Image 1 (cartoon, rainbow, N blue to C red):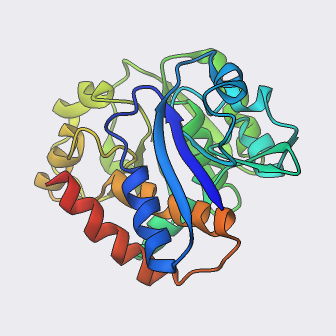
Image 2: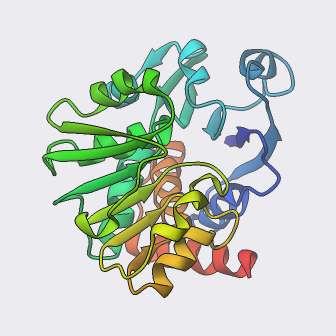
Length: 268
């Protein structure tokens, strides 16, 4: 039986329990899935204590990088981006992978978009590295707006076939010079760029769904651009997790529609 949960902090807003439970009920799979508040530095102690009964985990901030320290095995994609959002206990051992990379790609595809052309990524954390890995081999150049130069090395390692341009956080941005803009920063951190959005035609991908919608996504849509919200990313990375946890293949299109309806109802 699947005994799963989503771990992170803060976690109360998470829609993962709703999405996973909806999926398992639809598939007729026996499973429990709950949310657990686990702060940075507490992952190992949680798994040895309160979470010892869990056999499948979804990880969110700030645990995606910390997961590398508790994993007995790490997939190539998780090693490449130096983070993981999916942990499974198999024969008493924890295996770590990431469904964020393919979740991003599937979310783009669901909107008939792709990662070709000129890409701008706002932020340089774990989610940004997953986006870079999804662009690797698809596009040629990625521009990253970041606040911490120390993260540039890990970004480069996530996209070995890409050429990078790193832009300081305070720099002005010509959003119209990009085909795809992706915001990977938490909360409303990227709202500092609101005044730079005028008339846009590019696709904007917001990885957040809390707040719903973000100020940046609303401004982008009002300025004429195409916007993809963070619920789609959550849904598609969750579908990949459901397939892993249940060892079953699902109709992604059908499942995405089901979970989108559930998610929108919860957010409205």
